[in-house]
Length: 232
Image 1 (tube, rainbow, N blue to C red):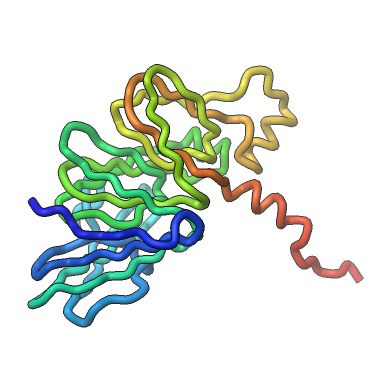
Image 2 (image 1 turned 135 degrees about the horizontal axis):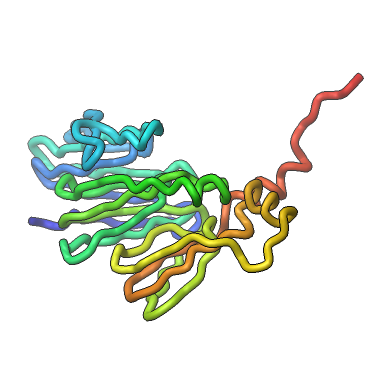
């Protein structure tokens, strides 16, 4: 199977993905992420993988649609821009292990990649993060994104990351979400609203990707500047 030719530009702040498709080559892309494309490329909406047989992505009540792009009689370029400013990372699946990615981080993948979901209700309830992780398996190209830059960490034994900074990790790693020791009720309340107070503890060997910024601290920073209605 041929790898997909690509390049990532404007990293890490406003990364965009440019894919070169040869005739009849296909790629699956997050819906609405297509910025521009050659007229030789055809687009259609569909759902793929695991619980999502067919077209798009059904995440236990949350729907995320996927578009399939196919180069027709000649090669063509496809320009992809994620919805949130930040970085894009490429990962090539080799069948030897899968990749777990935060559901909002999916950008694109080969049509040979299988996508499934793994419910993460505990993490979602406490940290305010997405309730789901995507699990990508099979063989092919996979791209994911984050808010802020993406940092790769090779885990050899144990590692701890704030839940709001986790972007992706290989499924060779074991993980457990837990509260920071000695957390008070006040701290727990802050954790629910702001993403603090919970960490994900990884063990084993594999690669882990974290983002250099988290969206909830930004929202907390901007909150005092929101327009408010006068009580008069």
